[in-house]
Image 1 (cartoon, rainbow, N blue to C red):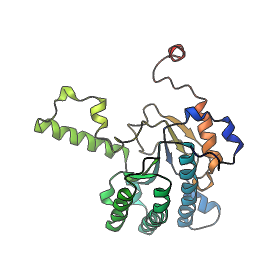
Image 2: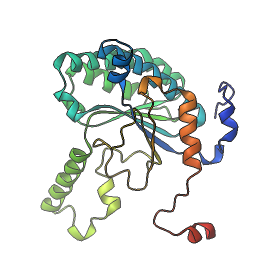
Image 3: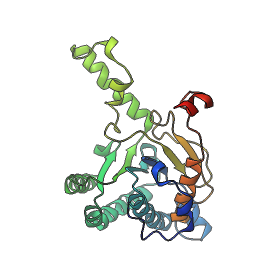
Length: 255
């Protein structure tokens, strides 16, 4: 962990031995932040990139193994073409700007979702970023792009069904472990904490299978307002919860 540059009294309240391994964030509220400041919606998305920079940097310093950001859902294709094109430009800008930093900070870049639906030039940048950072063994930064939880589960079912039809897999052999191998997140740790900004209290088709025992944390802050101390507050809240995974309080105490 690289804690020397974290200047916050909240750090003293965090148990560094109980840091969540995998945090995911629904980065909501860019458009509302722009409206609140009488700015175009696109400006809100650009402002949101600053929050991404802050949270990626702090997460790496804290020793978080995996950070997954809901960047573009498969439903977002229904937004006005001008906004979709602007979001693609922001993605292009972010990856080109941050690539050297990811390499120098030992961050491995990863994506989940239907990446093949993105523009070809974006796909090339993504492929390059994944290859460029493939040997980094620090934090895994995953962007969910053209992602939908229902579609991910459906795709997994289709692949497993094809294996059964071909005789490569028996129905009786299918279990949770087998199923999870067909999910986009099969190389990531189990999801410990899901954060959603903007005050909305829903999942929005994000990591539907993976959140079975995930702790959920909601904040009314809009994503561009979400800063380092806000992530620390979320982790402190997480560490104050008892994760029972179906067991009783007494069983947890005996472990």
